[in-house]
Image (cartoon, rainbow, N blue to C red; front, top):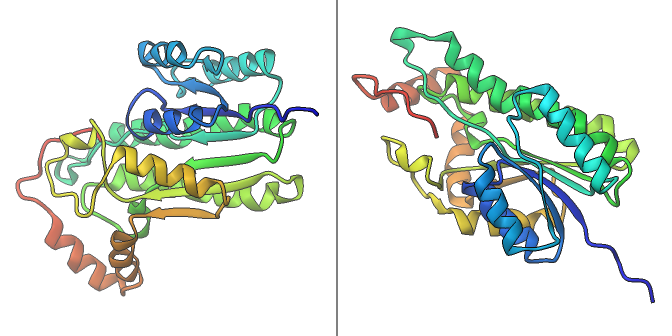
Length: 260
């Protein structure tokens, strides 16, 4: 009786936060996992803990040539991919009183352009995979304009549109697409936030929730439910009311920008 081969994943941003916790959930099933991050040491530790399951393909994903080389490495070692989870990203906050376009450039390059480079590398491998699935990490911030989130929100809104358009274009090829829209998750980076994070989830709980939901291949995974129940109605308010709500959230004086 033939044995079903292990599913092959590529996960970016795998060295910390949601990515690191997702890696644990994936590997616990016996799947094979290609992991990318700039932090090589954490990836190597993961490969030592799960011998034979982990393919370490590190690098700066904002460099298109590096991403092409990662794709070539995965193709050489495995030949195909079944699931790709593009989780890598960053956040920097904008001070509108001293607007700095380089912040927008950096965040968009990291969150949106890097994802596009990864999609370019991944699609030929997904086309050779089994029940292929492309997954992107957006954000609940795309539902409602929030103060200081100009760069982050713009990058994640662009990523959401990219994935939702690809869902249509890839449907005939049998490649399914899921967008993840988390609320606040307690990671080492969000610990640096200088504002309250209502209804935040521990990172392990968030990763388990995402991985469990991915099995059903929904169009979107948005959580936590109570946070979304409050946020979604706000997103449907008239623009004037959204502006009034946003103004009440602005902190004065504007805090230092801090990555999330």
